[in-house]
Structure formats: structure tokens, C-alpha cells
Length: 141
Image 1 (tube, one colour):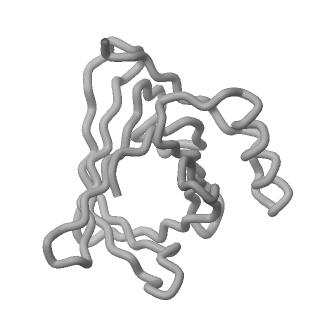
Image 2: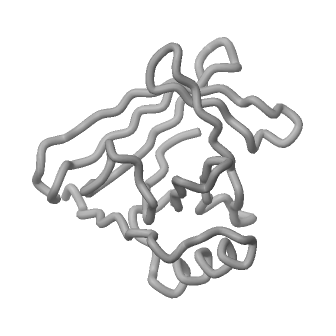
């Protein structure tokens, strides 16, 4: 749970040209459902803030790696946590058909060497990473 910065993605049409993209996950009081607040600036660092609220739940409770995510009822999509590092400082999220892929991190930046390493690992596991785009973040200070 908490905030995760989108570092790199093969985005959906709704999140193309995103800057400062952050997903915030909050476990609801029922202990099952998850509120997902996705916000970003459209087209530039100073572009209008867009918000895509979603809801989710853990589908595979044995591994916690298969979620169902819904932007609105009745639509629901499979999201897979396909890789994480041992400290949970980053995660790779995909969908079963591999059309979309996201690298998320707890910090707004990830150096090029680390991102290349993550992408190489995903490629070794059979994911196409050739068209991944880095999502840029700017400090709000």
C-alpha cells in the first residue's frame, strides 16, 4: 500500500504523455478492497492534473500477486505483480496479454542503470520491453 511512482510504462491511452505519475494504494477498512488514486500532469510537468480513481482487490490471496482492478463498474481487469525487489523499493506490474507494463518505485527517481537492469530481467522472463517509456518526475519543492 502507499504511494508508488510510475518510472517507466507501456501506458494505456488514458495515461499517455503523463508526467509526475503517482499511484496511491489504500487498503479499505474491510481489509479486502483497495482504493487506487492515480494522478499525473498531462503533457508537461506543469500540465493539468488528471486523476483516474480506481478500485481493486487481491484476486489470488495465496501469492497476493494477481489483482482485479476496476476503473468503474462493471469493468474489471487482471493486474499481475510480476516482479519486485527484496526491499520492495520497486515493482513491475503487467497484464496477462502483456499489452501494458509498468515499473513502479517508492522514490520518484530510478537511475538508468537500475531501470536497465529491471527491464533486462523482465526481457529475460519473456516480456517485450522495447517500447517502454520513461515517465519523468519533477520535485514539487
